[in-house]
Length: 476
Ligand code: ADP
Image (tube, rainbow, N blue to C red; front, side, top):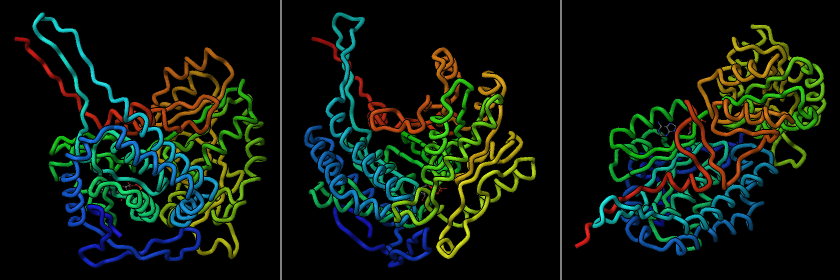
């Protein structure tokens, strides 16, 4: 169902489409296929709701965010089950994601109260300079399938806190979680039109958002390819944009690192969500002197990973989202083997009846990876860990920065001076230092280079939904 102007509705076309469970191949539900018409209706509703929503006090707006945050935590089991069923991640990870979404809502409920303006000393005795912060207007939010609840919370929460109204378009493959979240906002009486949900045909809905002048902000998380297209279209009406795009994270392990912890870190960073996050490790660089020892440690840890349906509590690696994801993973592995890499763990689809209908792939380690391989430059978005070797810090840095992406990078060391040398020179927006899971509600998440523009999270995330207004007053 679409949620427009506070009401649940079918698509005008009457069409529906199936949402699949990637672990079983079964259809979970047939849902309405919205398009441009629904997009336009939702934008109209958001536009009409804007004056009264933006006039409310931050405290009034915070009530809705705080209450939804509490309800997400109360209903964590139900929501996590929907997430796992529609996108496959293990249930424990799905619960972690619900908590993260609740964190964003809770945090912005508070931070919305701190939208401070400025007074600036004037150069003239008779002038006074004041700067107001005001909501940017109607927001078009487009979210991906790999975090069906956290990504929408991280956009909706700051947008609503700032006083903006929103049209949300979740990914085609994961609309069910978004529908559940809308139900909660509806249940607690969010004024109609403040938050609208349209799902179905991505491009026509996106076009409605891009073409309408009233939409003043586009916030997008997804592929670099689509992000660039949307940024170009947004330019026609000069919308503000936030683009959280692909990544190609290096994970560097220096010889002074705690190898056990680094091994745990690789498992957490590489295999979370079966390798399907934009900050997942893509390239593991190990200092030559201990490369062999490290791969032994890593293999021991990988033996504990369990592939299967994420609803089973013991499962740590769920299915990939679809067959195309499997094909890309296989392509990256075969290209690497052709160019000299060696599979020392995994490297195939798991066998057995349990796995026949889902899109499963074994967690895989490749040794002797080089920068000539596709895996070194293209995002795999699958459970493959290619290991590269390096001699010196300078070489590690050069290799790590050898990519058009700039989202997250990780390194493990105990040397404090190296921590600063590396952090200052790595060309990435997020650096995990002995930390494989840096994401948190109060910190700025986002990338540089072709990984995007803008930040989500923290006070920085709120800025994205605010404009400056400069008042210059001449005294009489
Ligand atoms: P992925 O490859 O991870 O699916 P995409 O960039 O294709 O990443 O998708 C991310 C989000 O962008 C999804 O919600 C998808 O529906 C949406 N999307 C894809 N193409 C378009 C488009 N042309 N206009 C607007 N949204 C789009």
